[in-house]
Amino acid sequence: MIIFKNVSFTYKKANKPVVQDLDGQISSNLVITGPSGSGKSTILRFINGLIPHFYEGKFTGDVIVAGKNTRKLSTCALFKLAGYIHQNADAQIFNDNIENEIIFTLENAGLPVTVIKERLRWMIEEFDLQRIANKKSHELSGGEKRILTIASALSPKPKIMLLDEPFSTLDGFYRKKLLRLLQGMSDTLIVLTEHRIDGTETFAKRYMFIQDSANRIISDDLFKVNFSDFRVREPENLRLARIAGFVEIPESEELIRKLLEIGYSPEFSPPTPTGEKVLELEEVSFSFGNKFSLKNVNVELFSGEIVVLLGPNGAGKTTVMKLMTGIRNPEKGRVIRKTRTGYVPHNPQDIFFKARVIDEIKVNMRGNEDWLDKLISLLNLENLLEKSPFLLSEGEKKRVAMAAILAIKPGILLLDEPTVGQDGETILAIEKIIKDLSKEGIAIIVSTHDLEFARRISSRWLLISNGVIKGEINPANVTRRDIELLESLHLDPGIELHIQAIKNESKG
Image (cartoon, rainbow, N blue to C red; front, top):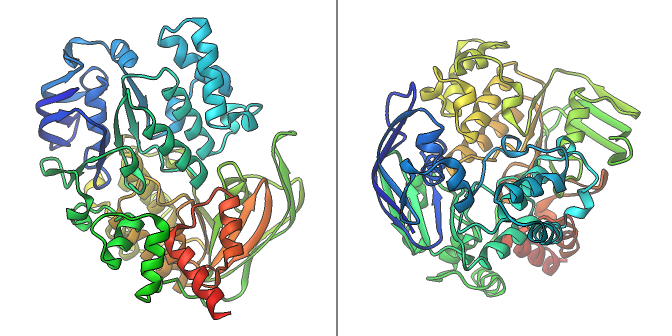
């Protein structure tokens, strides 16, 4: 059990508490959700002792974990009690390969050699890590790094498991794997933060919704929650269940049948008007030694076009984007760019080098003050301008990186997982920015696992797996065969794409 007694915390140099007057207890699995920067990660840091032992600031109150006050326990002692998955996977990987990373955690937990060998084998099998076992840690994709940190943290089977946005970069296959694993951890108390809470009802019955530092509610009935009050995107199955008249979430087949009966039709982004060709990949190939390769990739991109790049973790999406920008050069083939290219990476911290957010945005500013003000407003950065970009939440870092790249007014914009770490309101703002930029003639490529987001911004989806373009889909014209292709690429089509496929085939 975890008990909070009038807990508040203000980070060093901050002018107000990020969490204020937190009281109550956690005795069953809990999901914490709310706006970016609202204190979700801070609550996890209370439990594992990083606050007050690591993060500087003003800490008041008491946190009791398994009967002991965290003020009196070292972080080392708490580590053996509470496993922790950091929001930024790069900040949690210490070894050069997969096996050593998992062993490192098990050794620090003080487990005997026989148990370490058994747990290592269990995690490799559970998360299908054998397919990437030959890669160095720095060669892993963002999603693969996330899988590794999850496997490493879960391997000691801690009594308490703290997960900070674990699903954010996982494809549908690994998302379902993790949900099943958490559902089966009956002897572990799970506390999880997340913006996208779809599926979490399988292991958690209680939810904490945060508005700001002092305003929170606890609910065990998601149907009674107004998600917009907390800037949280309502799960697709819950939203559609409301439309269909259910009072609890039914099985997918029953929900689809009812929605078809009432004539429900999903909405899709219309095709974007396009101009001249601004980017072309001609028979492009690339490899990391003999470990991974892109093979004969051909892509054309036109001004004003919005294209979504979809595929499983480690498929090559980020590598394709880096080739498009010139960060990497092809071993074979050609990349032809006809305008300035801007790239917002998966890890936004990779492009930061200024001490203040406002300086980070201004450093390559090519527009006027009106453009600067528009970026700050659209991305909700007003309260962050004087802060260090390195000390923000991961969602806030992503928004700052987007503003910094958009400040150069690129003709081609590449966004690598832009919705990761973002609350529902910010995702809507990002959608609007993408559509507005498209109308101004900017060509945009978005890499994502979020098909609901993809459906709202683009009518052209490129599917990639193992470095090969497997096909192209217009979601409005999707068929059951397309659904099968998406599922074979570890992507979760969602209920609305299934409905559209049935409608399209009935018309045919």
